[in-house]
Length: 162
Image (cartoon, rainbow, N blue to C red; front, side, top):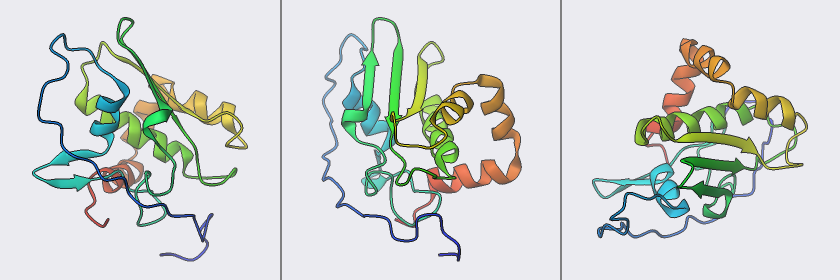
């Protein structure tokens, strides 16, 4: 870890044990919150690949930044709402976490799904600004064109340091 961490001692929770769902529960191609959660914390080739926190060697699940309960799906309207809770009010990595969630979902869902990503109400000092950044297509595209930021997002998504 580097010096000057925003949250030097985060509370770390145990990972939930998940079993890969092999049966197709959605013959009609509908989506539910557990589907989204399974994608964000995917099982690939029997390896659990979690989204890593940008600042710590823990998953977003271990830091209670994201939970199954924080995902809402309206399949009829094709809308997904992800609400995450940064570990501290002044988390400078909140937008990076939101970008990670957006990139992961863009990779897994067709573009007709409208994905909204927000910080939980009252959980961040700049809640309105962070939410605006995370849900503005042009700002998201510009952020992902930044090679350093894109590298950080990719490290969080594809790192096997957990």
